Length: 218
Image 1 (spheres, rainbow, N blue to C red):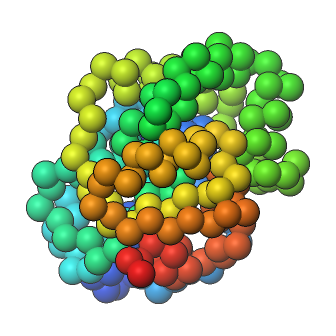
Image 2 (image 1 turned 30 degrees about the horizontal axis):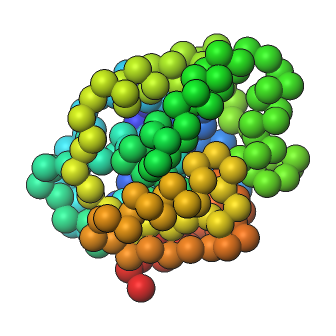
Image 3 (image 1 turned 180 degrees about the horizontal axis):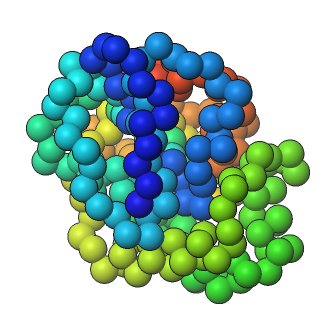
């Protein structure tokens, strides 16, 4: 697991962001320094404990896709109070025929990730367009991560919910909107639906301030 303090500031405010599977910090290229601390997490091949967040006085949480599940696992029961905590296009049961991705589809993605055409097709479905800034990671590392996630998710207990807001993309072709809706309707969260949004939810978000604002309860 890679944990990085992407931006450091001399104040107590922190945004903790759990990225999606296969991703890295390439996602944030071009985003301005926000004037507060930003900690990012990606590559869940071997999840591990987070750094101590108690020194921070104002905490915000955002997680995307499979990062939603890992964030809940690492934070459930932790002594932190988040001012905002948003799940973007993910659930706590992401490999599930009712609440996530069909298990056979998930396994097929693992098996076929070595094929360049399959990867290109996946990212088009993820972004809703052929224009997407690809992460700078090898296909082998991405495939190993997804295989590890599949094994872990199917064997580990479902963690307690740590989120206050769930944002659902109506045109999500990775984790279907109906599956997300079914899962979050049973949790104490504010659900915000964006009918035209694909699985990649950040096309119209260009700063960390906007990311926090998108995750606030409404």
